[in-house]
Length: 276
Image (cartoon, helix red, strand yellow):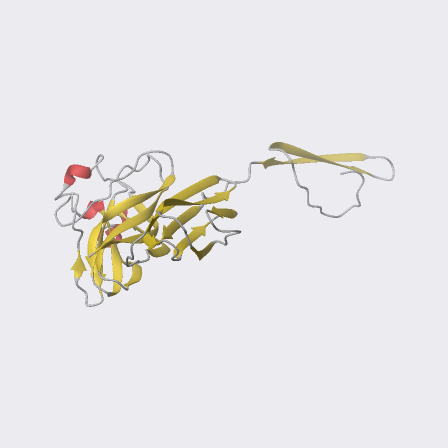
């Protein structure tokens, strides 16, 4: 740093990691020298969380009829979305196709930690059809098995409106943040309509419910199917439950005992219309 006055402070930026030793030497008028040392350890800056991206499209449209591409993302430095120029963190755009066929639409979110992609399809057909847009719900929710009975459920994990009654496939964007340290990050959903009626899935695998099993591997996000639900028009809420709540009655999905922290973290939901 060179010669400095008797009192002061400065900011220094390091280009490499490791222990950095500072030495200060003071000289008196009679040339008496005093030296002191101190050090700081410089470590790598932590990477941000991986980005999250969800995409939906008009499931089916006729030739020369606008199809909507919708997307929403978090933690992204920038996005690439097919058929969209300079997409923002969330938005939608209409695209018109002049020939029939299946189009695969992909959205990719990037940041310093890496990238995540999500895809959906548009079926462009000749005859007229009724198009129902997907329902996207972005927002964190979670449950924990080690917090007792109260921690095993989260009411109103997501609130949404159904415009077209019918069968819907419910997908969840799950953040498996513990890797393989927790082996029972499993959950199931129920849906309540505006009158308080509880809807359970039409394809259950544990009594009336459908358990979404833990997914092994390093920390990652994954889109997981949560079941098929028959929904009426109007307002609905998704209730999230930890598998521990029913594991005693339906133990077939246990990956060992639940005797410590076992948590589930959801980043968002997507509901896909399947018809009447």
